[in-house]
Image (cartoon, rainbow, N blue to C red; front, side, top):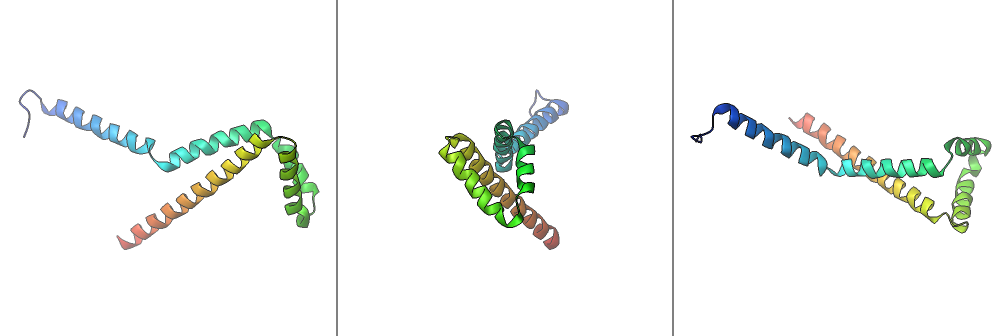
Length: 118
């Protein structure tokens, strides 16, 4: 049923505009987009608060068996010296990274299953 005052080009334009809007909305509400944004913000904050090169140098200077003790001591020292916001940002970044990795692996598995069954 074609509206009387609307030609095919106008109708096509309106339909495509709705398709584009729905596509943009589907991207905007996608959970991995928001996880990526929060993970990026956490990474920027951590990079601002931490000197990554010195952390890598410190890890390379420690024997492999002592790394868990070193990390534990570093976290405890940060907590006792009032660097709570940095620790909360580190924990949030870790949780978001693990959650994103889990969702990516689940979506890849579902995609692989869909491809094999089709």
